[in-house]
Length: 615
Image (cartoon, rainbow, N blue to C red; front, side, top):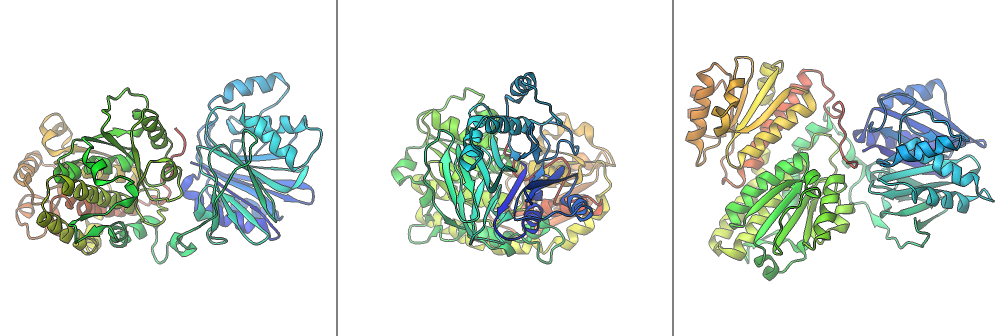
């Protein structure tokens, strides 16, 4: 989950590295560091905490040069200390290495290196990798680019785990070496300059021509060119891609936080998820990326949705949407558990893996496990060049644009929109009539405008947030497709305000949850006008009978909620299968405004990082 940025060219590397680190800070902000090659030496600067702390360190101890690597850390092995900050050096102190991933057998390798006289200065697994590469390079008969690449190759053959790495050595002045397995790494191509980064957002301000490295590939990067080979020593084919978005897309604009910007981008992100996918002539959805004919889809008798965190909540809501529209059995699985369970999957089971980044380690492992067992496995992700997008048998792109805020917002509603499209497509193949399909399409076409109307509630929600911000705990409750929305609302509040919050099905209130009701613990009920509205009213009455404050999410025109609830937020009326897309937006805004009221760092919540690329 750490962030890597590297530069080689004829300009000063430091501004490029620092700008890139700031853009990647959402991937980790426990510590940061740079290694700059200048005058035959590599100068190291590291600090604990945010990138701003590193900038202050460099201001006190300036450094410059045209070759450099840098890193922002999300701690895995070892505490948050300067010693554990990257870059790390080898035994000689002349090799510097940054790493994203986990070396699973690092302790065995570390013990072996200690027996050979190596001394370690950190608790990280990364330092072991640096020593392995340095040791192999010191055995080489010549000290050139080929020898450094071969040294890295020898080291990587010994490690078990995941890595995205970048290496410089003081004895090889004109090259940066990189490699990846399981952790993303992208090459940026410039004019007599090149870049390496964990995410294209770090380098899009400098180039939009990129190469996404594949697993087990090694790149030797020089100012005038590059060469890509494999860990096994073979050559590697590559394709230069054009980045779809500009640097402006990853700026906050006039918003104080990325999260708020991305919440307000949802009319457009939902519109883009629908764009070109609604077919009036056939009254269905068109999802050509599935790479499945109608006959193939007709043969599916079970769907399994796999994800982590917010993506798992989207899958839970997707279960309701697909089952209600298509009448196909759907199950949801945590990606982190999928490959460790012996799940009975029939031959006609279709598996979807859901991940905003397309690089989530657990979800990628689930994809590979599903394919290993012979199941067609499709991806739903936001990054068209991600590993999941490349390795899946097909899928659907979200087209939500860059999502920088650690707390996922627009990606969630895009995922729900895609599940609604899948429900329409599969339903039309099975039982939905042409007329019913047209009605669903008409409702979907109105959805972006309904999202925009929901966002007009921002000021009202901010006032409610101010009223309840200092509560010690919250309960979120909903029924049917609103239960996953309750889970997501609770997760958003936990993520960015650190307030204890839990989501439950409303009907479970009396099965133990009611013991948590107090005057100090607000309950948030998602209670639109639907088939279980009266049941929700009864549950709210149970909370009010015990003097618990209630905030309700209801439907425009409803008057019943206001009679019994302390605060009511009314969203536009729409069909039940689209309501979750609207009902989650007030919860996103509520969590945002509570976090701001408490003075929390919304875009960089403690202990979290945006893309979980380690298991």
